Each structure stands twice: as structure tokens, then as C-alpha cells.
Amino acid sequence: MNLPPVPSASKPVASLSKAATAISSSTAKQNDNDSHSEEERPVPPFLLKTYNMVQDQTTNDIVSWSEKGDAFLVKKKHEFSQTILPKYFRTISFSSFVRQLNFYGFRKRSTNMSTTSYFKHKNFKRDQPQLLNLIKKKTSECNHLF
Image (cartoon, rainbow, N blue to C red):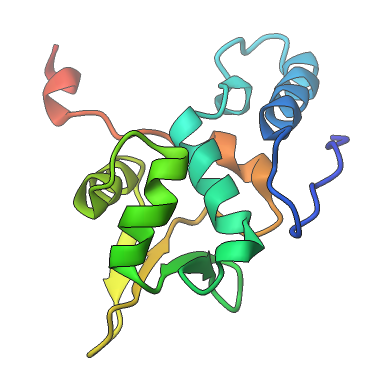
């Protein structure tokens, strides 16, 4: 599969939705018989905004990728809530942001005796925005009963 070029880590991914659409289009051609392929789904705005937020290197003292790039760190929760969240979302509540991450299967880890929170998802990785469309929002178990 030919994937569009990965955006540079030095600037926000403004055209990430275009990249996701291009990936979806190329996958759709390969999977003509499967019209509901996981890779055809558009990337949810929450994930796009979160990815752009973490990619923004001007805020690395508050939020950044982990050293390996397989997770992101919120280093200063109060500053994150007051300055970063309002730029991307309609809330300044850190707990609301964490709740949304949990809906998408992210796992939170807090380091011992630290104010740093660590969030990880197997398909949320630095310089790999094409993986975002593989992240699914969790559904309630009640929905499976009907």
C-alpha cells in the first residue's frame, strides 16, 4: 500500500485529515469487497486534535511525546488545563480530557511522586498519523446485548 508522506514532527499536522482520507481511499481500492474496513473510517476529531497538540514542539515543557514516541506525557497538569486544552477543546477540565482518552482505550500511568501523567495507546505514536484511524471508541457492553 502506498501511504502519503508522514508530516514533519516539527509542525502541527494541519492536513492530517487529508492524509487519513488518502489512506482510506487507497485502502478502499484494495478492499472493494469489504466496504466497512477499519482503515476506511475517518479519524475522529478528538484524536486529530490530541495528535496535533502533542506534535506541537513549542509546548514540550507542558505536553510532549515520550522518549520512544510510543506515548505522550503531560508534565504540568494545571498549565496544560489552563493554556493547552482551551486551544484544542471546549473544556479546561483535565479529568474530562482523561475520560475521553479512556473512551478510546488509552491507558494512564502516573510516575511515582511526580505530577507527570503518561498516556499510551498502541496506535498513537509519534510520526505515525496513519495509525490513528485504527483507534476505535469503546462502546458500552449494554449495546452488545441488543
